[in-house]
Image (tube, rainbow, N blue to C red; front, side):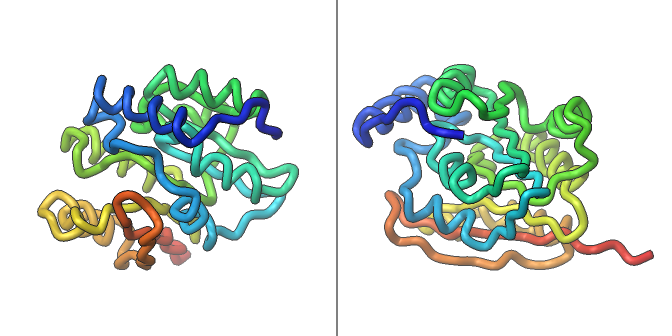
Length: 206
């Protein structure tokens, strides 16, 4: 997949800011993530021609670009965003991108319609700490249900918000769901700085 149209960093920031002001709970940040954070989000992923990757909340496509650049031919990639404007923009930039406009809570149905039994990696830019509690639980349940054994779920939390009760509760919930704490990597070249967090789905014993 090739990028049809280049967007300046300023234009991308203004688009993101406008969407944040219209719906701050849905977008969750004032500015798109940095390229450094995007690279950290995908650096640990083992991607092959048979990999299935899902991105939740791609926004303006900063993480999307890194996945596209790294995913070998034959690999499958689905981007899911509830914001129709972001979906349209992503399809313009990458016409071959499989992008569905809808709620991440419906991930199981989206995969079923594509004939996918599971996914190997899920990356997310969703603002879990600011989402309604039930919606957050529904999305996490969908992630847990669709991620294959040994698969990874990767997201980030801003460093300044890391010790807040919603962020702590989210990590505690994830540790319970995945049976382990997350690996953590600090990324300071982002506004604001962030921790990249990744959990691995346990391989079920037979």
